Length: 397
Image 1 (tube, one colour):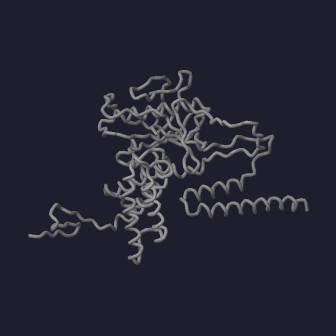
Image 2 (image 1 turned 90 degrees about the vertical axis):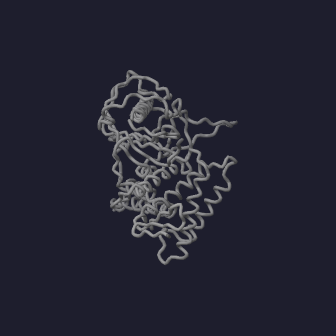
């Protein structure tokens, strides 16, 4: 009988968790796969983890140093193209680097080693990653408010302060609760961790230094760096990163990156234009994750044309390529058109509007990437009577 008494509350708790889980699942099922998977993972952990007794409590393992949901910005503009760079280094990137702790400032304003002299040397490994991998963590590392009794609101309370961040950083709110902005982007909570802030600045300045020293450095007009810190041990960690070039709408890395994640396990991706589709999809995913930048509303035109084609394909073809119904495609087109029509006087989009456009563009770019092998390839010359393709060549005489 005592065992039965203990089991009944447990079953009731399980039933309540299942009920809440399926309610949330219905809301998120039409969103991205990573959101649903993260919710399932969180539910299973909460269901199976009973926790130690209070007198034997142990610290909860932390997945990465960036457990806070805030995405923050270092307002330090990267060095513009044309500024003389140092001589190219012999080895662009060792796999493991130990940085000495000193403080210096580049011409661009980005500290080269922004860790105080009294901080110990820390070993780290640079690990290229992608917006695809970052998106999978956005719903895993959300901070949770401790369930305590609310404090009474004092009389005449009309002003409310926001917790301060490190000097030179700004917080921005993401449409799906996360916070972010440009220059150097990280999800790490830098409000109260001076040492973590120093390491972030140290790693970012080292990466920018390596970029400027590259012997084949292209021209950059709007560049960003995204950092993610993943601890490996007490004195070692992984610094995951990627660069974003908004002028070319690409993400890139200083060192080789294994692209299986962004290829979605598609085999045989060799053509440059095929790879470009995957890279641009990652760019739009970055814009969806960090919609703080301002883009020309003209970037919406290719998306509108793609949606129009997808609607006609869904109507006229027996087997349409787009994984959406005609109604869904029409709603996407209407929303895109409304965003363009309601853009600011300078004809730009940002914030929630860019978040929506980025999400739609990711879907269409991925679809183009998946259907690339079956696309008809043709070339038009200046003469309208000449058309060439992969298998035939015809011209008027």
